Length: 268
Length: 268
Image 1 (cartoon, rainbow over the protein chains, first blue to last red):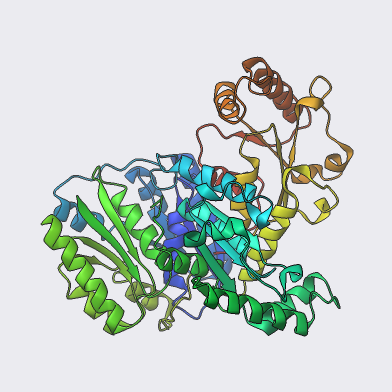
Image 2: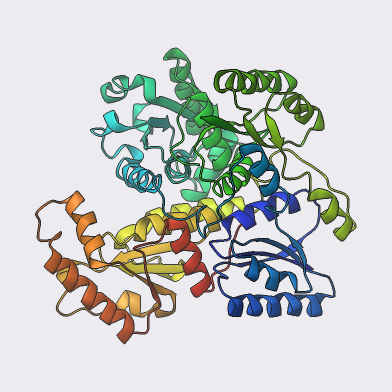
C-alpha cells in the first residue's frame, strides 16, 4: 500500500485537509502518516528518512502533502524520495498579484491562537454547561437551541458548532414522558426564534437505541415511531425549522444548520 | 473591505480551510462569506448574484475559493465578477498521473458519512461520559487520559481529540483537596501508560480562574502556584509526559499530544 504523508511546521491540519480532499477523489487505499511540528532542519531530515523508508518498503513513491513557512525546511523535504505537493505553490503568487500586497508567512497563523480563539473556548464551555436540557436559565445567551428525541445527534452537533464555528449551542431533549401531549416548554417558547429541530428515520433511531439499551421500550420500533411522529408534528405546528440527520455527518448537519438558521461564523 | 467567498456543493469546509490558509498569509482584512451546498444551477446563479453584488458594493473583485464535483456548476460560478481559485485545479492531474488511476469525483466524499464516522461518534460519546473524572470505570477503553489542575484545558482538548481524530479521551482533575499529599489515584496508576499531563503558566491560570470565580481562594495566585508546583512535581516524579497549554490553541495541544503519545488517528 502506498503511503501518504501530511507534513507541516504547525499542526499539519491544513496539509491533512488538502491531501485528504485530493486523495478522496481516487478509489485507492493509502497508509496515512502525519508529521506535525517539523520546524527545524534536524526534524526535517528525520522526516526525509521516514519518507525514504516508506519508499524502500513499498517500492512506491509516497505522496507528500506539505505546507511550510520556512523555505529552507521545505527544501529539505523536497530532497526526499516522495512526490511533493505544496498547495500554496500555485496560489500565493496570483492572490498576491490580485491584492497588491506582499505575503507575510508566519508559523501557526492558521491554527494558532488568535482573536477568534476565546470565542470558541467560551462556546465550548457554554455548550457543555447547557447540554441535554440540564438547565434552561442560560438560553438568553444561546446562539441556537437544538431540540429533538434522544439519540438524534443533538450533542455531537452542538459540540461541533461550538468548536468549529464558535457558536453557543444549547440542546434540549424531547423525552418519552412528554409524548401524548407534546408541547414546547415555557423556557423554549420564550426562545422560539433560536429553536432548531433534529429528526431521524425511525429504523435508524431504533438501531442506535437498540445498541445502547437492548430490548427496552426506549429502543422499540413502536416507541421510536411514536416519538418521531409526535415531534415532527410539533416542528410543523410550531413552524420550527428542522432537518433529518439520518444520512448526514456531524459536519454536514452543522453546516446546514448554520445556513438555514443564518448563524454568523465566529471563526474562519 | 474586500469579500472572500468559500463555496462548495458540500459543507464548504475544505474551501474554508484552503482559502483561510492562503488569506492568513496576507495582512489584509476580509469580509468572509461561506455558501455551502450549492448543488444545482439555480443555487449557483444565486451565488453569482451575491458575488456580483459584493463587487458592486465594494468596487473590489471578491476572492472565490471553491471546490465542486460537477463541472457545470463550477462553470456557472466562474462567470461571476469574482476572482476564482479552485485548489483541485493544479493537483488532480499530477496525482492522477502519479497513481495511474482516474479520479472519480463524488459529492460529499470529504466531509460526509464514511467508515471512519462511527469511530468519531463513539469517541465523542466516550469523551463526554468520561469528562472531569466523573467515573474511572471506563478507563480500560480509553486511548488517552488527560490529567491536570482545574482550567488547564483538559475538556476542550479531549473533545477536540474525539471529534477531529476519533480518539477516546478521558480526563481526570487533580483538585485543591489533593494538594499537600498529591499522589496518583489507584485507578490512574493502573492506566499509567495512557496518562498525559497538562500544565499552564501560573499567571495565566490565575486570570482564567479569576474570570470564573473572582476573589476566591481557588483563583488566588498562591493556590495556583501551589497546585502547579505540586502537579508538575508529580509529572516528573512519575515520568508522565506533559505539556504547557499557555500559548497553544486546542488544535496545537491536540496535535502535540497525538505526536508525543504516538496515538493513531482514526480519521483523515
